[in-house]
Length: 343
Image (cartoon, rainbow, N blue to C red; front, side):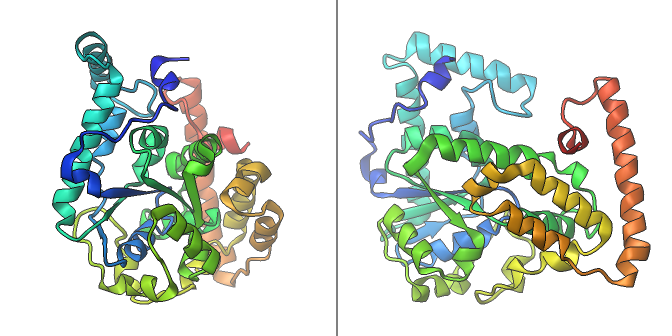
């Protein structure tokens, strides 16, 4: 076990934060295309809650000392070694001093954005899923919300938003494979420190979901409160490029739209194999039932156009991707492959 791993469960005492200590963070972690922007706006509809477009600031601050994060450049590994050496050799309290300084910095920035009267700040940054342990340690009083969505809904939304309708799931290793697997492991490890929420329950204003959000944040959330999300405007580059403009009221339409996107034989077959890769245990942690999702995928309707043009194009694309992945694997160009996972 590394020093970083050994320190995961040691919380940082919230001392010396000054006025910034009055701001309590609410972290929303999810895979991309999980509906996190809508849930962020629902949370920020409370009159004492502030927010901003995805800040990402804690990923370099808390992830900086870690050498085990995925897809990092060589300079990050060098920085991680330097930060840990600096903390160990020069700070009296070692990494605890470093964590406390990062906490003070983040709370000060949240407070400056929030302004007077705010008590909470929603930091909705999907990338925080890989530093959830650090968030729990450095911010022991924060609310940490894990947002889950039907994985077929995520797949369909990725096709619509990221790939302009083209079926290229083999390009999406992180949101479809590594991300969910890592989040499930983290939720099991953190236990009650995490408040799991299903996107489908949130937009339906499920009373139990609102009760758990109220308990986690210390704020009162009701159907009337979350209805105010339409008044929450979050400028910035990051966020939902479609849903913010499309949905001006809470609607269950996003929970059903995936059926239209995945309705051809090739996409149905890929989706069912993907569900089996996720597996019964992971899906159960996420709040879904494998058999139910498999049945829904098998019963998707197909139109003659889907069977003819779209399915044929999808089949050619998937075959090409399989051959490309095979060549990469033999040449040791790639250590990850959606096909090796599915097959």
